[in-house]
Image (tube, rainbow over all chains, first blue to last red):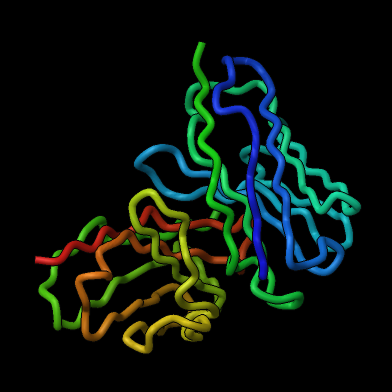
Length: 120
Length: 106
């Protein structure tokens, strides 16, 4: 059974760095791409970036200067780090997985999301 | 970035047919996908590659379109379909989502 679960601090101070972990089960990170998508309260979805099955990463150009995605395949974890957080970074952060190994960039599996509030 | 434009809201009665549109600012071929999101929940994939029904999704949902104009159809609508529906394109980088269409039942 495919599962993804996000974890991290619920509250981050402005200008600080956000660190989130996506722990996966039921599949291998070396076979599937994992993405991060976020959603401000009451607003729409924004694709942030992806960790490819082969370890390559891609980022939304709007966030690229602040964002880093990495992984630990031995722990089945994908990490998100984003620096210089501001209040408009507040929202729910999801990790998601592609439908299949070849069907990339549409998201069949989602974590439950983790709410991050940026506030002093 | 490719901008996806959706109508903000629709209200329909149970049993009716509803079409939700998504217009792209540039061609996305058929790499358009649709999601349903209920309040407090994560999105779920309904349709991929414009017209393919995701496994487990009721056949009441269907998708069509190519290029810049796409449609999600629900026929007939049921009370449980109350949700926000998002389109997403993966043809152009970065992936982008529409702002969502909130479907309410009368």
